[in-house]
Length: 124
Image (cartoon, rainbow, N blue to C red; front, side, top):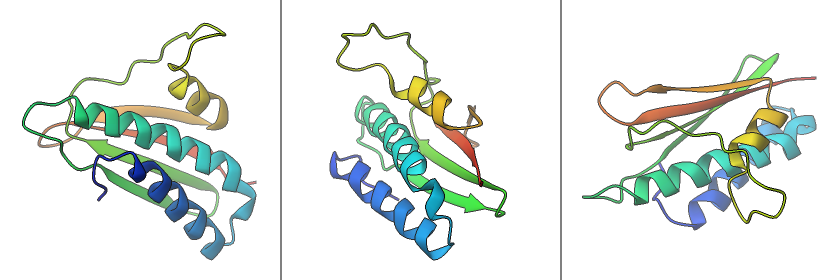
């Protein structure tokens, strides 16, 4: 669990890099760090947008040594929206980056409330 604070992004990224090192999956480090950053950034923003919050964000990594799953849960039920950002836009590229660096990504409603956004990266 992460607090919905700007520092949550760096904490999640550092955790992901450490796990990849422990799992001897260093080749994925750059892509997974960036995908993690984008998903957690979106979840923190979604959590902070809720009334009665801010609510924590859940971050999880799992691997079967052929694929690595990154999942991030927040309490905001609104689906993630992939934007087609202009070249000079300041933001709006997060899910485009996730789409470019992962083999697949998606989301689904969480059981109680909110959503889980996930991405899968192949182990090379």
